[in-house]
Image 1 (cartoon, rainbow, N blue to C red):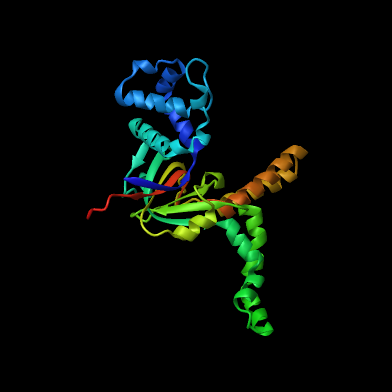
Image 2: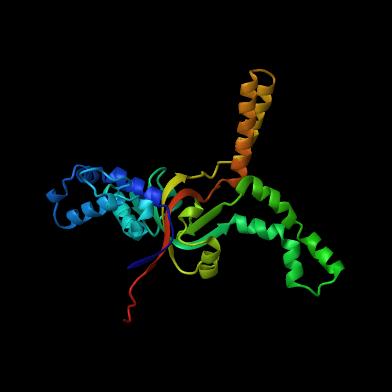
Length: 289
């Protein structure tokens, strides 16, 4: 099987390896690589190459480069991290995973349909909607163009909302066969390619089955209401205005704005909020070959 990665958070991968392979890392740091054999020897040598700093007497300087600089090892490091999670019983991998079976904390491997949401590109389109419309429809009359602009007033209204709450955010949604959606933010620096190149190649809703390794962040419940929570926070802030220190009043105001931001940008039921670690598609050998 070959994995075609479009996203990999190598910092999280490094953290998983460091925490779950601590014993092996200690052997590397202590220069005890000769005590292992076979596959363990190979893994020890690999970890020596993945160490973020050089260790005098144990790891050669040339092999002690940062994992973020050793891009050729990223894919192997992913497999090492995945197996570590699996061996420690921290990874839940089920194609029929229902949201009721999702653990409150832990890691999941999800397969299903993918969707990429690029808010920055949407903002750019919204800001230049009139110019784009004019360029694509040069023969449209002034009256018709004004009518279209009025009908698409969302374009001018969306800009400030995106700038305030979303900015340059990218999110990915993987929906499995149980129709359970797992949504999380993607960090641009961990994308394998520029987002425009990825969307050009795969589309905003890539075809086929995609896989995501992620850590569960939050599972909204059916009765959860972000709007109700915001109303309670606002009520508390209004009560705080009647007394208390200036600092306390500012704290309440900030809490209201944080609650409003949560309403605008958080995952709501029935979706599950996750922190993506890797997103990829699996390419298996051709059965007919």
